[in-house]
Length: 322
Image (cartoon, rainbow, N blue to C red; front, side, top):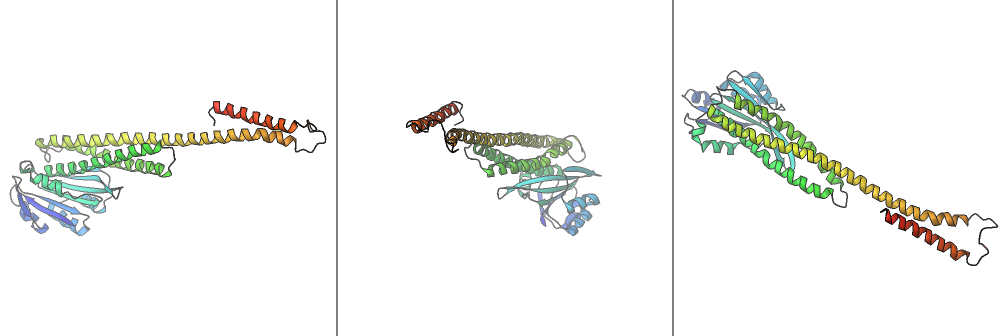
């Protein structure tokens, strides 16, 4: 459950891995801070961290239960941030949560569900100790930037799949799987938008507020994350509109195809109705029927039926029913 627990000096250099029990000793040193990474911790572990960092009871309860909305809360001199994460698992979109506790000298990230490890974000921070010297706020930026950057490939994959589905929509053969995938994509994008849209407000607050926790030197970095979130949100909105249009176009094409089939069936039925009408007259068993005693009557009826059917065929062909 404890992925990492690392202490850093005030100059941003790494002290090394520490145990949870040693956190209080590390924090007694001037200017140090601790970065703890957890994955689906149990209640006992969260209570241990609450004891070490003085975390708020409500924040601990949210981090343990998960299934929280994207939000940012202020508890005294600390922040509690909940961010929805997304990941493609076996071609399907899965969602998770990351809960972040940040104080003047600590940062605790708690991952639930589908989420990648934040080890790359940690390595990026350690390669720039001059920025990491600004404190846990730079670690918070690195995590948020990592989460948002992982959304970009998901959006790109959705865009490429949508282009492929558009080709399937205009294919001559109707595929039920295409309609099902369009609906699934629309559902996934709606869920993804519900996760991404509130993130704009969170980062906007980090850009403008909390001067005691976010130094001015880092606000430009948070603005960069905001721009990425805005771009992702706009791409999701655009694809949702395109999906809605694609579903309507697919429905229209299916209806058009059915109308074309009905027109052809109606045309052939009309051509069959004409000889059926003529021949039905001669099945009524009357004693005196027109031209029954004439030797040319049978060929004449055949020619008449052929001309009638031919005339109907030409008329339907000109009307593009056949």
